[in-house]
Amino acid sequence: MIEKAYILNESDMDRVIKRISHEILERNKGSENLVIIGLQKRGVPLAHRIAANIEQFEGNRVQTGKLDITFYRDDYDRRIKSDIQKTDIPFDVRDKNVILVDDVLFTGRSIRAALDAIIDLGRPRTIQLVVLVDRGHRELPIRADYVGKNLPTSRNEQVSVKLRETDAEDSVILVEGMEDAK
Amino acid sequence: MLSKKSILSVDDLDTGEIMQVLESADSFMDISRREIKKVPTLRGKTVASLFFEPSTRTRISFEIAAKRLSADIVNFSAQASSLLKGETIMDTLRTILSMQVDLLVIRHRDSGTVKLMDSVVNVPVINAGDGKHQHPTQALLDIYTIKNHFNRLEGLKVALVGDYINSRVARSCQSLFEKMGLEVTIVAPAMLLPEDWSGFKVEHSIDRIIEDTDILYMLRMQFERQDRKLYPSVREYNRYLSLDMKRLSRMKKDSVVMHPGPVNRGIEIYDEIMELAKEKGNNILIDEQVTAGVAVRMALLYLVLGQS
Image (cartoon, rainbow over all chains, first blue to last red; front, side, top):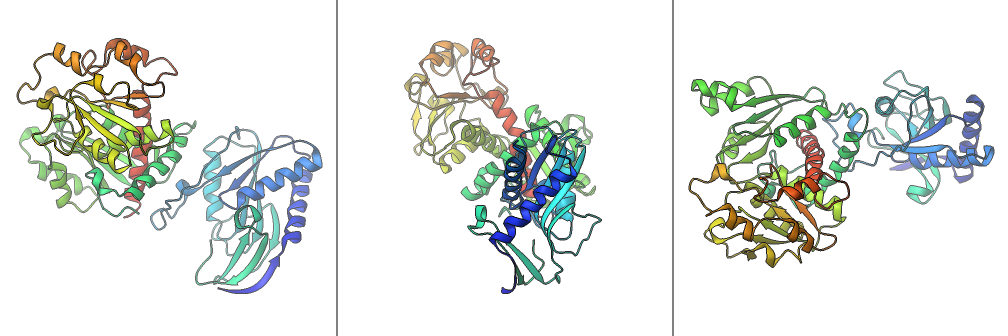
């Protein structure tokens, strides 16, 4: 893999997540009735960071959960996963404004699966999507409500997201890859 | 994902694969606790369950497991089939396969029949019990139940008590438990043991292990498989092998009682204990075993069908 461009460093990422946190509060007129669900695995620490920001800005803690979409994928036959991550949503999503968080938005298939998974848990009032990077190439009519960075890419590039919680550093790098990332 | 196409015996899975089954079962346990107990994972797959011998819990457990994964399942039972019109088992099998099923779950009263059927079909087969031979999904749900309760497996002492010789559950559990690092003792009189039990650790009375064992696994007396009477009387059985309140009270504080069901009340386990098992907070895991059965079978269907 060849690094092509450094997209976000640690302080960039910090600012981007703070901005998104403010946008969420602005659009939802505060944090009442909000819950945040991170998609396994890098959406989970991002969800926690947004929750921490909201607590700092508004003084109250919103509930967070994590979601694994393995059982909802549409390509089960081709890529069965043995390392199924934990789904842990310790609250009722019914009538909540659900903030769904993922690191990279690409084809949209993971988000399609996540929407099904969340709706199986109950009927939220809204589901709003946060992504750190939108790299294009959608295969389904899905868009994000809050985007950290719009990054036009070619299909043979990959977006490498690292987070200090999972990878010991905060960075987003565009790399030349062998095949479709994610 | 799994190295073998079918699961006919616990020996078809290596230690890593067993851990994979147990870990996947955790996720499926969560799904079974939700309000909508269904995921779309196996949508469009068809599972046929062929039971050439009566069953309640295994058949229903597989059926619920398949449905929670959105697979379609058809149930065949020998008692209500063309077998009664003289169709051979192999012809029945071919008929069912002609309907494009993706996986077979088979139980048969004769040891080895499931393996024979597996050898002539090109879809995966899961053995739901064959004669006195193997019942791998039972052993897997048992090890899952144990792991969930104790949070470990290595070094636990388990006693398999009763009708060893006729029990496919005993054979599957013995080899799986040993593979996963448990210490297995068989508690049975010589007439309920195979001719050569030189490789086993054997005791003839439950009183010899009751204070020391972590898991007291009571085997069902297999009256339907006893061509000749292998045990003199229920009184004799009660004296050496049954679990009554007095013996229960002698067990270690953190130890547990298991039974694959259905229980012969008054033989393996006394009535009072079965009543006690209905209350919360006891160490009788029979209901937990049944609950685990659905999750473990979901994991197996998921992993077996995922390779195709």
